[in-house]
Structures are given as C-alpha cells and as structure tokens.
Image 1 (tube, rainbow, N blue to C red):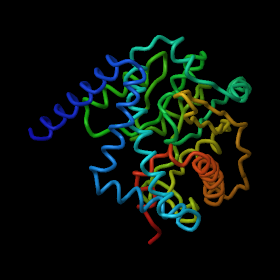
Image 2: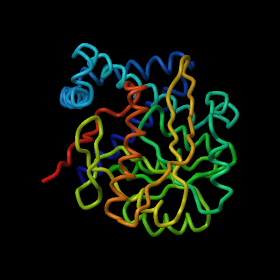
Image 3: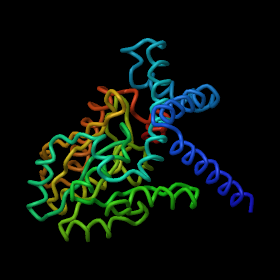
Image 4: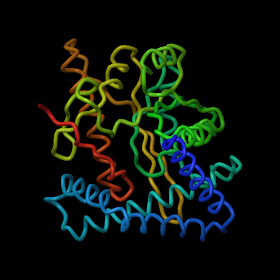
Length: 297
C-alpha cells in the first residue's frame, strides 16, 4: 500500500514537471531543467558524494578536485536539461525532432543492415541517450532497445510510451536473450547500453578507467553466436541544445574459439570505446551510477 502511494506520488510529480516543461517557452523550460539539476546536486548529498567518488576513481590522477566538482555539477545540469527535452519530445512532431539532431555515419548502419544478420548497437548513458533510438526510427530504421524496467510501474509505462514512439520496441532485460536471438535472426536491430554494473554471474571483469568493472557479457556472446555486426553509436549534446549522433564502423571481433577468452577480450573492446567517448564528454555521462560496485572476490 505504501509503495503504491509512493509510486503514484512520484508519477504525479513527474507528470507535473513534464506539463510545466511543455507550457514554458523553450529557453525557460531548458533553463528550469538545468536549474533543477543544479538544485538536486546540492540537496542530495549522498548521491553527490557517490558522484564525486566515481569521478575520483576515473580522473583522480588527471584532474583536481575543483575540476571534478565542476564536472559533477554540469552532469546534474545535463540530466535536468535532458528531462526537459524529453518532456517536449513527447509532443514534438517528427520534423521538429530531426531539426535538433545531426547523425553521422548512418551509412555504416545501412551497410551492416543489408547483410541480413541483424545489427547490435553498442551505446551508453551518454548525452541524452533516449534521443538516439528516436532519431534512428525517424530515419526509417526502428530498433529494439534492451532496458531494465524502473521500479515504479507508472513511470515505466510513461518511459515505454516515449521509447516506442515512431516504431521502436522495448525489450525488458530479464530473460531477453531468447527474444533478442529471434530478432537478430529476422535481421532486426537491437540496442544495448553496456555501461552499467552487473552481478558476477552475468558479466566479465574488464578495465574501465583503470579499475575492474563487471560488465554484461551478453553483447559479446550474441555477436559471436549470430555474426551480427556490433556498431558503436553515441550521442552527445552540442551548443544551443543541439545533439550529434555518431555511428562508427563495426567492431572487429576476436574469434579464437576459446569462448571464455573471446567474451572478455571483446567486452573489453566495447568498454574501451565507451570510455573513449566519456573522456571526450565527461559532464554528459551518468556518474551517479555505481559502475564499480561489483568487484572480484
């Protein structure tokens, strides 16, 4: 009962914010989003501390604490701004969304898609990551996005409506392997966010910013099993609230026949690519996530 009331209250707050973001003029809506992110950074001391700890893990030998705090503050502002953008995207016409986004390297996707073995998109919680799948579908190439449902079912339905606009489909993480294999067999595209911590039995340990990070092995397993191309694709914010999506050529996979080794080596390749993009745009990644939580025994 208490959980149901809490979920309803969270939903009402989010819907109220979304309505406000839509009613305000664009500049004021985005200013409010950034301001709320900045406010949350100062109010939520526990997550502020975790964010700073994670930044020290990654950049402690390269940047001063003052620089790291600036990155942390901007990352919260970025999240607030992203929320305001998503509220408006839910009512934007398609042409307005595409005026906002520039895609580079879509030819890599088209070439891989033509082979008929399916395509695996490798991406991360970088930039306004929800926009990438929407932009892809508006180009005429809808994708299936593998996600972990949020705990609040009301907010999960709201997110699913956003993600499935213009033909995309949501695949929930629990027991998704069989469904993804079926989709790839049909030559479809599946997107994975591969930058989150997982339990030991689900992942392999690879190097991420110089520390062991337990990373899901499913993407490498699927690529080796099906022959589907793995295309790195990342989105990040540019000036004046525009967004750029970069689609890279397929990752050259290691296939030695030693499955255990190949899963680690290829997952390391994927993770190193993610790290390289985070280094370019550190204030646009989800530093609040406990990426290094699971450690080797």
